[in-house]
Length: 83
Image (cartoon, rainbow, N blue to C red; front, top):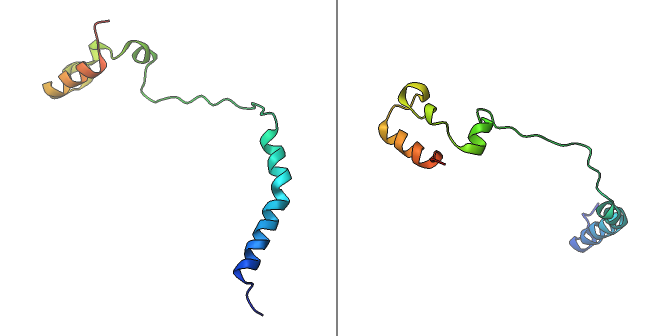
């Protein structure tokens, strides 16, 4: 048995796509229904830090475990402000 020619394969794929066209069009125009809402959380992020920045009490060697002064200064400039 001979393998089908590339033109014949292309016609077959086109016919299959054309057959599913009405189904795809109706699925695209259907009104979406919200069934589930996903809540994504970040482990280790406190809501206070989200709205007001890093806690200055935790940006210390003792409480925060920051070992180098340069790292502490970089963290303070990036994540903490007076207001």
